[in-house]
Image 1 (tube, rainbow, N blue to C red):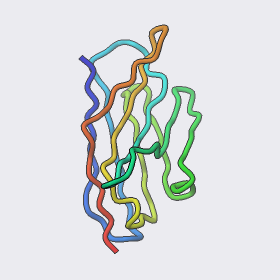
Image 2 (image 1 turned 45 degrees about the horizontal axis):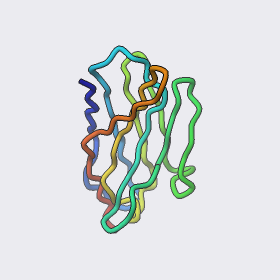
Image 3 (image 1 turned 180 degrees about the horizontal axis):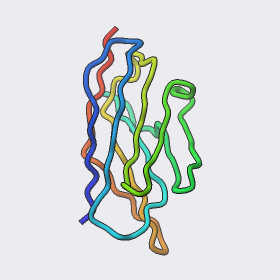
Image 4 (image 1 turned 90 degrees about the vertical axis):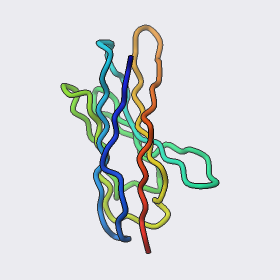
Length: 118
């Protein structure tokens, strides 16, 4: 049973920083990509950042230059360092892990709230 456990969300003032962590467990199958999505109230869920097992990264345009995704493959853990936070970054952030065994199976974390006050 795959589990993704997130931590690090909270309340921060605009301009501040937060670091999210997500640890995956419960399977010996290789994880290809890991990443973060977010969903703000009344909006669709959107990709924030993604990182492959080889270290290639993708970012949403809205977070480029402010957020950094990293990964510890030995620990099956992905991190999201969020700097210069803005009120529009307020959302529930969800971790994802794409396991590969001939085909991709995506698992989602339970979500962690990030609130940025102005």
